[in-house]
Amino acid sequence: MFGFYLEGDPIGTIRIVPMGYQLTLTETLLLQLGHGAPVPTPSDWEVGRLVLAPEHRSDVDALRHCLHLALQYACTHRQVDDLYASCTHVLGRLYRRFGFNAFAKDVPLSGTEKRYTLICGGSTGVAASLSGRNDTNRPQ
Image 1 (tube, helix red, strand yellow):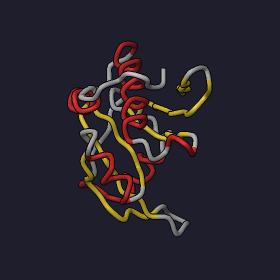
Image 2 (tube, helix red, strand yellow; image 1 turned 90 degrees about the vertical axis):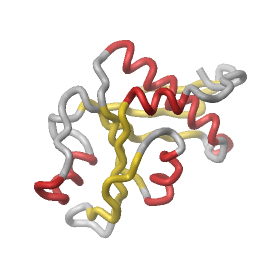
Image 3 (cartoon, rainbow, N blue to C red; image 1 turned 135 degrees about the vertical axis):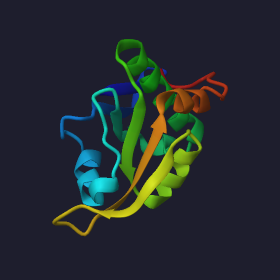
Image 4 (cartoon, rainbow, N blue to C red; image 1 turned 120 degrees about the horizontal axis):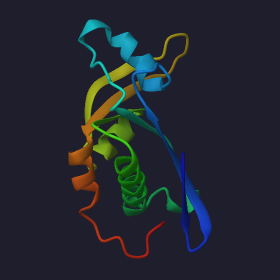
């Protein structure tokens, strides 16, 4: 889990969890897809729980920078091949800007009314997409 600060004030958090251990929401949702679903490995990671303070949520560059910092740290300390996430359809479209692609839509979470879009991106491509912006005056 990572925390982000801007000028000393906390503005957000993100969680990155290794896959292949049935610990993540994405892995639970992959089971709904059956035999055609991707099979994550321990070098694949779920990116989730990205939360920004209300005053920063509409700032796409802040979101980009926070995700970039988290990915940069993770890649420095562990092998990171593919990144997965489960999100709403609208957020899935947003994450396309960052190198992710939707591979399943309207995936139901068993026992609930919730439906998710599943997205995936190679860490190299996502990192390249995230680093393409000016990072001055951004969270650390």
